[in-house]
Length: 203
Image 1 (cartoon, one colour):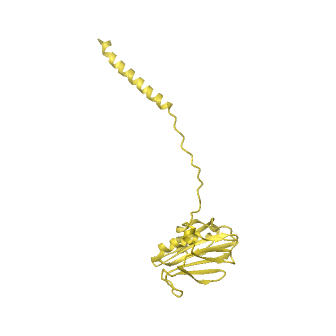
Image 2: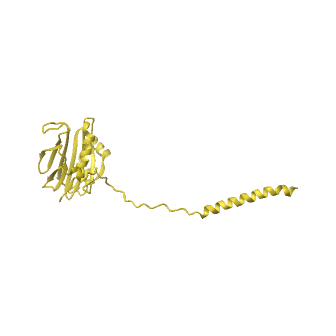
Image 3: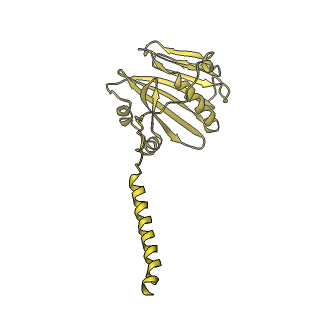
């Protein structure tokens, strides 16, 4: 009687052992597929908003014969001041005329430098503590004509904004700057980015 009572228990234990053994055998037979390798090279620079040639086909072209650079700008902009070292453009649709002090302006300028990178140029900029704090907070690397440039905001105000893009290339420090009334900022920055995408150094 005792043996017949143990038989069901032994059968259950045997089935359990076989089941556990089979499970581990199945797991060991599985091969984990290796994770795909993604070859990517992180970029240190972001590109300004790209502009198709169709969008800028009818835009005007500014050319500096002295410093060998060009950029395009739409018909909404007027060149109100230009010399060999600096250019000032004012935008008609954002409240500017040739004498107004309100609206949006874009300026370009060039300085000779012995520095070789845009980062070195940025680090030596002379500014007070508050401006430098804003500059550092907003500083990003962007690609300007395929070259590393530094973009940063210079002021933080409810009424006025200013954004600079600095590029050092072959002994010249190029700066493109936009500033003006903050109520036009978002739209103006979009167009500024389009202008940046047309910037070319021709030397």
